[in-house]
Image (cartoon, rainbow, N blue to C red):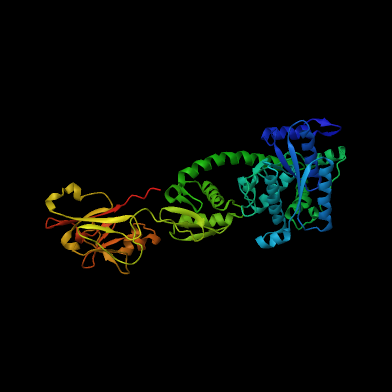
Length: 503
């Protein structure tokens, strides 16, 4: 850094930082969030000076949070007058933050932040600005890293604030506006607070003092006024140390993010606005650290943010996945839950039901009588059943061993002339082919085959004229209905699907 008139030349430093991170480009329209404090006034002054040589367009935005009465009104008037005196357009807004906090069950500090970023995004949309500049500086970064450490955070959180952040990734989706996402930029992020104050003194820049910044009830203020000064007695350079921690975590995060991208593609079965679905078998080979990252990403994919997803939520979810209790659920923030099926891990809204697989399914408890020979339609679907009768010598052994799951051959005399398709009933049993004539409860068969519970009532069963199950359709035939040397006629039963109508 160079010096000018006894203090650091912030203009050179900030311009270099902006170029390094590509924060501001020629021709940009930038909304500048100005609270009236020294940091935001310094930022506006620096960008205005730079704008004299770089073709950028600035628009001032200030939000009155409605929390400090006449003092807040005076701040708004100060910012409006400052913008006018510097020849800049401005938007001054007001929000009832106390009401927002009550409605969304947030603390005042959090609600104010939500309101502020939503307002800045709205202003950016109105003036067609792709970027929003705010006055966060190096001391703010140190406070943020320390605050996240105290609350409990991993690599992602300990990166602190980033030089540039897409606004929807920063705030919950239900607060942010529906407009196109602007980029939140922090040109002063590498600048210590002392240098900002020195710049303001050198250029005779007046600013406002927000009394709430001294309120020890806010965690950030407590960190700023009590915890950081205490840490400075142990490490006088604690601000720079925490800055370096943020840079180290950011570099590590970038590496982990690339690994997470690969892991996501490896375990993801499907991604829709309704659900994120992972393969359970593939999931088991991932390191726990990667599982945590993917769960956080899945929540963000469904809710628009992972804000509010804490360590306890993730541990509960991982514990459920590890126990493998199919059908169980864990509640997650934003009205989401994680649920296990036999083969998948589902992150979705509460009440989500996976779509049925594309296979024959009975719509209700009514039985469907089959035509022999002939074609029988399955109500409410494009599926139908084609049956035919054959002489034993008309089919080769290879044909009888047909591997197609939806075609099966039976002894016609065992099945009878009036077989039906019906769903399961309590107490159903059959004699699965391959078990040497041993009986099995249908319920146990479904469990052993890992057929999800929601699908079981819709699995069609081919039932003989006498009422015996001859085929758990698509899965296993019955030993008693098999074709033998004594079979006089063979019945073929095949499920087929009519082509979908073209649109």
